[in-house]
Image (cartoon, rainbow, N blue to C red; front, side, top):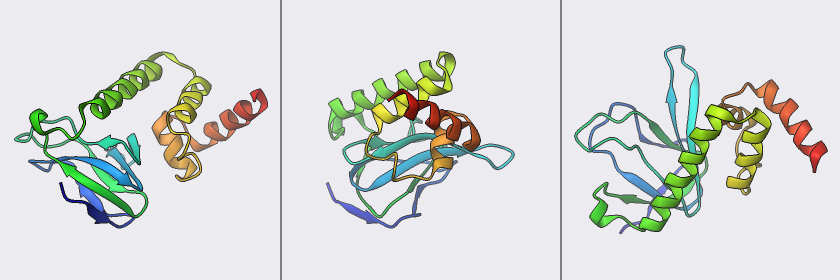
Length: 155
């Protein structure tokens, strides 16, 4: 599999594209997100080193997510064919994290979601803008500021 070097801001996938791929992040930081009808971004996931990012649509269906680089990165494009999956363990770890996130979005407080974010992504808290963390958590940047203060007081 070939390494691909991408620059910060480079879009790997735009919503609506067909025959999309997944990407293993060898170095750097990538994210997937959607944009609502009002033009607001909603971050679905971050993918730091060692993580896989992709859209779950079938190759013949239009994808639902944008994927772009938050830092200069090195990625390995992966076919969505399960038989050629790069590392099934990494894929199942990704699914586990996403399942936990969905459950937390449905039932956890914003502080609990932030704590989970810090546990899940300890190395990227300082690498992404606070507005992106707020988007990922489903809260406003102002609410994130309050939550971070609560979090720091608990440590």
